[in-house]
Each structure stands twice: as C-alpha cells, then as structure tokens.
Image 1 (cartoon, rainbow over the protein chains, first blue to last red):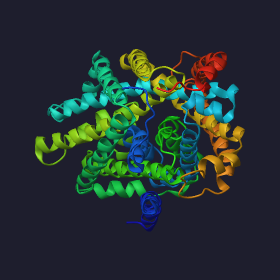
Image 2: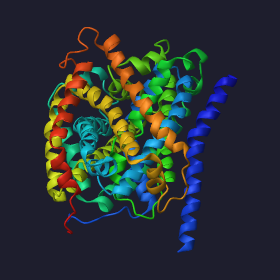
Image 3: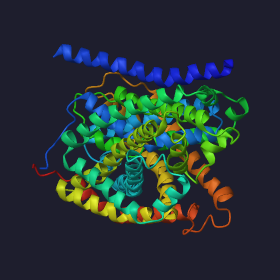
Length: 38
Length: 496
C-alpha cells in the first residue's frame, strides 16, 4: 500500500472514528462524575 | 397522546435520537458517490476539515437554541433574533418540511426494495434498471409513500419518549450492527482491498481543486443535519441538566463515522464484485441519474453476484435495504416532529397538528411519488434552501450577540465542557462565508453547466429561477404572516 494512502487512512480514520471515541469517552466520564455527585 | 411537556429520559436516548436525525440515506448512497466523483482520498481531507468548521459549530448552535428557548424553529428564531425575524424561523421550518414531503417518498422506495429483497425476487431479477423504472413510473410509489408517512406519524403520535426515543434506541444500534455486518462481509471479499485503497488514496492535484472542497462542504451541509432546524427541535426536549457541546460533537462524529463505514463497505463491494474493465469509478458515480442509481440499480445487481448462492445474496440485500429503511425512517420522523412542534408552539393541540402535518405531507408528497422530474426539482430547490437555513440560524445568533449566546446558552447550565471564543469567530464569519460561497457555487453551476439555456426559467428543473421563485413566494408569505405567527407562538401557553 502506498505511503500516502496509509497516511490519509490514519488521518481520516483517526480524526473521525478517533474523534468519536474520544468524545464518547469524555461524555461517559462526565456522566459518571455527574451521577457520583448525586 | 395528551399535550404534556416531555423530555428525553437519558443522555444516551437523546444522543441516539439526534444521531437518528443526522444519519440518513445520504450517508449511505450520496457519500460514496461524491467520494468517487471527487478523487477518493483527496475528498476525505476537506470533508474532515468542514466537519469542524460547519457541522460541529452549527449542531452546537441548534442544540443551544432549542434548549435555551424551548421553542421550535419559528419561536426559537423569534426569541433569539427578535419578533420581526420570526419569518426566518418559519422559512427554516418550511425547508425541512418541504424535504419531508419527498423524503417520505424516498423512505417508501427503501421499504419497497426491502420487501422485494426479503422475498428473494430482487437478486433473481434480470434487468435492475427496468425493475426500477417500472416501479417509479407506476402508482406503487404512492402506496409506499403512504406507508412511510403512516409509520412516521405513528412514531410521533406515541410522543417524545415512547415514540421518538424508543424508536431510535432500537433502530440506530440495529443500523450500526447492519452496517458492521455488511462491512465485514464486504472487506473479506476477494479484491475488496483495492476499493479501500482507492477510497483513501489522495491526489495532490485533486486536493488543490476548489471544486473538491466545495463538494466536501456541500456533503457536510446536506449530510450531518446541521442547519436544518431538526436538531433545534429535538433539543427542545433535552433536560435542563444536559450538556450541549459534547453531545453536539458526538452527533457530528457519529454521523461521519457511519458515512465512512458505509463508504468502506460500498467501495469494497464495488471493487470486489463489479465486472472487470467497466471502470469502477464510473460505475459508482455514473450509473443512474442520481444517488438512486447506486442504491436501487447498481448495488442490488452486485448483491446478486455475491458468492454463496441465492440465500446468502438475499440475506445481504435484505439487510442492506433494512439498514437504508432504518436510516430513512429515523430522519423522516424528525422532519414530521419539526412541523408538529411549530404548530403546537402556535397553540394547536398536538394530535391535531400531527394529523394536519401527516395528511398535508402525504398529499404534497404525491407529485414527487409520481414524477422523478418534480422530485429532482424539489430536491434541488430545498437542498440549496438548506444553506439559507444555516445562514438564518447563524444570523439569529449574531443578532442576539454571539458572545452572550455562547456564555448563556452554549456554556450554560449542564455544560460538561466550555466552548471558547473561537466559536464567536466561526459563527460570525466562517459559517456565513461558507453559506454565501456555497449558494454562489451552486447557482454558478446551474448557469454554466446544468441549465445554460434556461437558468432563469422558474419551470426548469435545475435552474436559478426555480429556486428564487419558490423561495421568494414562501418568504413573502411568511413575512406577511410574521406578526400573526409571533402572536400565536410567543404568547404564554395554557397549561395542559
């Protein structure tokens, strides 16, 4: 696989799926914090 | 259902419902076709950039307006920008409702093909083009349009929690499982990797082409649900303690994640199963006149070539159309709810508002069910109209004061993360510039390419004239009735 293809794949998948995973983890953490305060 | 104030019961139920708005048929059929037309990997880079400077800021804004004002598009914009701008909110609502008229027809197509696939007749068809043409040229689309509108109306009749939230809690995870199954099957087909390589291979010349950037911006504008007023409507039912920014980002990333997964699935399938020498790029982008060519003509043909025999072929074509139907239904119900919310804000009882929207939606969808030309005209006019909607939402926030809005509404009660001043710059400058560039670009295409001879003609399908006349008539009506709408919408509601 050409290097530029691999780099694009890493950037795009990293930004989209990685972004989704990062935001989801943050949301889960915040939700846990909220419920522990109750 | 009695009129009562309802709220999504949990953050996750709300997130799934909003993802249900964003994930529609466009994620599955339009994304792959546009990627193919715009050079694969070269398209994906601007597509990711516009996620951050169009989709996420507008989704945050819609969430904040809905939660802050607790009103649909008319009341929300009137409360934010001032009573004399209520007509802008009405226009935003009308654009999404006009799309609902023909989107119900599209949902009906998906249901029809689901039944054809499930009975096993789809994969044994000899001529897929004829199957599609004979279906769309008859009266059957009206029946399926009626079925889809009835399903949508039933969900809305059940209410926010038992209808919208419950449906999305079931359909969205099911849709993800379906796409995952299809993706796993697609990438394990011999030759599939070439498709994935094509999808992610960039070309520097294409990357520097402004048309690719405009296509990427358009895809974000149409595909994420940002600027439609739909997320604003659902946000009216968000609990006060609920966050805005993280939920908005989850929606945008979730939507684009589904698009990417669907793209991988379709490119892998096409490269693995398309006849050698036909030119895969042309097959993805050129078969059929529109997106429908890929979904209803080309892909069913490929499912018929899948190894494993008719049962396996029928299974995969059935779950593909099941996924497409789920994506369509979850978006359709949000369009119906938007219109219902506008009428209930004006004091109409919810059941009466629903009956009015469902019957009108069915009747005004019939021309699109009967004529592809009418359908394409409506898709053109209101598709571009969505960009005006995005502009109006941005205008309302600017009129209210962007920094004030950011501090009071976006970073208000319940916010998990605080959004910085960069939001002010994006909403004040970046979004309006994108709106102007996009509308200008599509009009330029209409004048120079789509309809050179009759670009001014209001009766021509893809003309500038048809957009200006249809938008103009609707805007004029709403300006005339502005005071009446404000009086009905912003007067204190009677407790149910």
